[in-house]
Amino acid sequence: MRLDGPVLIIGAGIGGLTLASALAQRGIECRLFERAPELAPAGAGILVQTGALLALRTLKLDAAVSAKGQDVLMGLLKTERGQTLQRTSMSFLRDELGASTVAIHRARLQEVLRDAGNGAPIALGAELVGYEADASGVTALFADGRRERGALLVGADGLHSAVRRALLGESPLRYAGYTSWRGIAAGSGGVPAHEVTEMWGPGARFGFADIGPNETYWFAVLNAPESERESNPLEVVTRHFAAWAEPVPELLAHTAPERVFRTDIHDRLPVASWSRGRVTLLGDAAHPTTPNLGQGGSMAIEDAVVLAHALERAPALADALAEYERRRVAGTNRIVEASFRFGKLAQLENRLAIFLRNALFRVLPEGMVQKELRRAAQFSLEDGLARA
Image 1: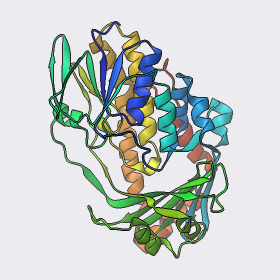
Image 2 (image 1 turned 180 degrees about the vertical axis):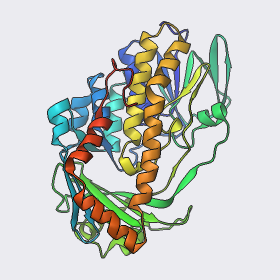
Image 3 (image 1 turned 30 degrees about the vertical axis):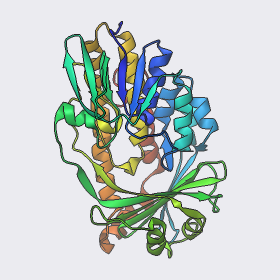
Image 4 (image 1 turned 90 degrees about the horizontal axis):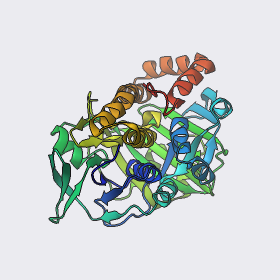
């Protein structure tokens, strides 16, 4: 398909940068527009799941991402006292599919994606306020009065997407009932390489993974009212988790206060379609999810690769967007709901319910967990049912 203008990508995060790279490799012109005034190093750590790494392999970017992070070959679930509830080998994903899950700093992942964009222009300080679409194209409207004309407008602008609001109207956020803090600790804190661990206590969780070089990503989750804030997030996390088993106190002791970010956990109820005419969505703009399954950024990567592939192969734009939704809507919506349910299970506060939950995880066969990991890891551009 030959587009009659550039693809306008709103948002230069993981999904937008991946789409720019995928389009550039296919010779499709695109332009990126980012609301922030600069592309500063963002966020803390992220797990690039096996399916997303396979998607990046189609762009020849998987090796670069792996080189800047750490392969995850073992997953551990423990209590807040350090007692192991479940131990799951993840090396089978590498053996069967040729790709691991990778723990990496978000800034390093974005660096790889940005460098692969083949010079796609990025306009900073560009706040979208709406768009105008007609039969021949779409015009993006920005707060500073700028107007940009293209063939397709893609909203990759996250949970609070302006494109989604203009396309689908206002839809309420769904607060999960808990908030999170994310940080980067200097050094390993005794955390083994190639492992990701999550510890569960009453209404609270703490997880961590080595993301190299000489850095450990951690996250803390706590049941809390919505919209609470504090002047020193690290102090609050330390107060709540100081009595947990090592390496939690060690990691917190080696974290600088300015490297801690607090985020309330929200998603939205899934929708059956996120495209209209010459406008579509991807990533959290399309299917915002809670982070409990570690799939948010990975789904954005997969969305971007599938969308670029559809734009290259389909005979017309409408066909491309229909194929994109056919391949992505059902699977991503399933993950959104599964993640929400899993978060409720993980954040239990009732002691009896926690006892029963932990007993279940102690006897849950490793093979059952691996079956779900294998299902989530599937990705192929030739498979119309990928991740469905």
